Image 1: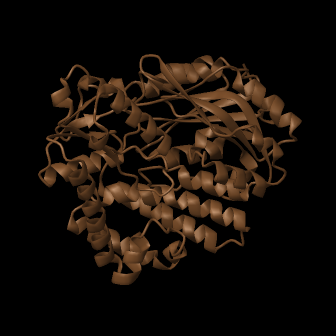
Image 2: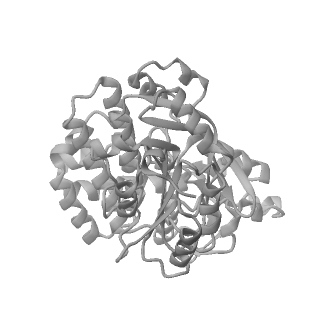
Length: 448
């Protein structure tokens, strides 16, 4: 099939790195759409498996596919930027190479875009998360109240009030001119949550929105291509994202609604920074304090905007280095108080996310009897993180009543609805109410 540039409506940008087991499904899911007015841009980021060969093979058979091979491993941000720059479509669709599109979403989106007179952004209502082999969960970004929004500020306020905002770029179809004209690219050399800043800025510069009220995207979980890591680089990524969003607020005369929206978006990387912080050593914290010092003027915007998040208070009162150390110590003491309150002879941390991993390491270092990590993702059952065995909570079933009375669980999921569900799940297994607690690093329960 052949496209002329003027006909292309969608450019589907797919960064590719070591996904040979999933890439065929990903690409085919786009080809199964109406691709007569679409192109697929594959950016192979120096894959060491057969991903590059798969890209070339598809391109040979389909004229609508373009392949770029990076000369060095650049990361997902630079790969997406390269895809944007070579794209010819009026709209950009972001697709991760281990995920796939569902249904005939591109055709429906094309109709919606025409009806709504080419909006800057199309927001996807539903997406799926898939746990192998075939377990699906539906996530909803908005409800029908969105129809009452008449202005961009109305849209932003509605998302703010519902607290259902997702900072992942593949939830949105974006007019390419909006990205190019505003130089809205992904920040290079970011190793974690690279699209949170992109999406937050996108919402504030866009002048018109449309809402696709169907399911468009399926996100695989635990496919291994994007992992949550506890390290210094990830901490730096979180902190720099906060600094850039603060500067973005400071450099623009935004409305009250947009400022409040951006402050809420800042809370997520801040919350992600905290579990990282408790895993760092003193040398790394000193290095991190230098980055805080460089961004101190911008970070002042956080004052009085994070009433339940007092990192900035410590930094301002005691300076970046001592402030980070004292804040870290306060968080550690709070976690230990939670554990001492629930007691128990056999302790588990629930969730293999950043929070769970960092807390498990902390508690073992402090001498607490952490037996392992619980998580509902059964694809990771029996695997290990830092000598902690990961298993589903169902492994506790069958234990005697006396044994269950000795077991304590600290829930580390960072969304209140998930915490409530897990709590009921543990109670149904037979754990005592007094043996279950949770730790949120975000006052509103951001997803981490």
